[in-house]
Length: 356
Image: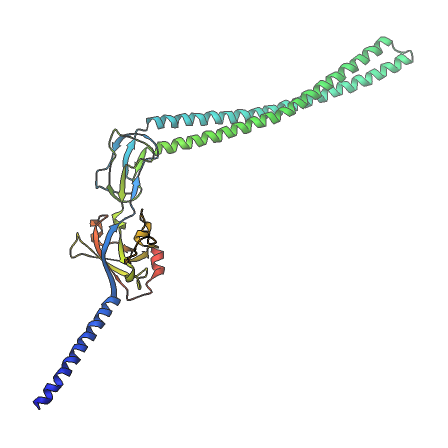
């Protein structure tokens, strides 16, 4: 009996070892399929560099380093006296241009009255000419029959010639008055164009005056502040940065072999080195279109020299769920450990896209 037990013992040991190996392999596969983890990850945020749109001297600074600010809050003030004077001058130019347009319109109305007067005068001259012509024919007929003097006939003919000349002058005056309308209309159009230009200059002056107030473009925390009272700044000179910590996200650089089952929308957990014991929750927003070295300033050239295969890393953007108390303690550049749950290999891409 003892000999039989001794013979069976190696088989029992082999079975136990095989079972342990099978369970270990199953556990490894389960762990591997359940998620992916990397500590090559850090906190990032789409911060805004604040720069003035006009040049000038800084007369006041309304924020300190690392101060929380709200969108629209005054950050710094540029001396606005020159811009205010330019604004007042632009207002005066608009008033002058409006007066010029009014004068041009009044001249057109006045010219229409001149045309009406010239037309009435021409009508009277034509009536005088018709009367003189009829009178001359009557005197000529009387002189022909000996009932009138030749002198009267000659005088009536002279009046006809004078009346014809008056009609010609009247017609010329009416034509000139009508032609002047085109000149006055052109003058009015020029005045209206000048008014639009003056209004555009006024709007530019108004914008420049408003841009002397440098305000926060978003909610966030002030960082990299270089602006100081008395400094001269040019348009486009970065003065400070506003970092939206509540909208911070994580960039996790996973090895390419870890991304087989990673999809947008999958849940993620983030552990921050600075906050031991704190777990932040989020989800995969997107996977970068290229590896990290692809966008490097000096990309590797594998076509030259001896090739050594290196597993590449691809950035994955993880957005954090809003409303978590520890979000306000995050700072851009903090090191984190990011884990992605890959049970759902399909993820929720539609939700991730909508969240963007």
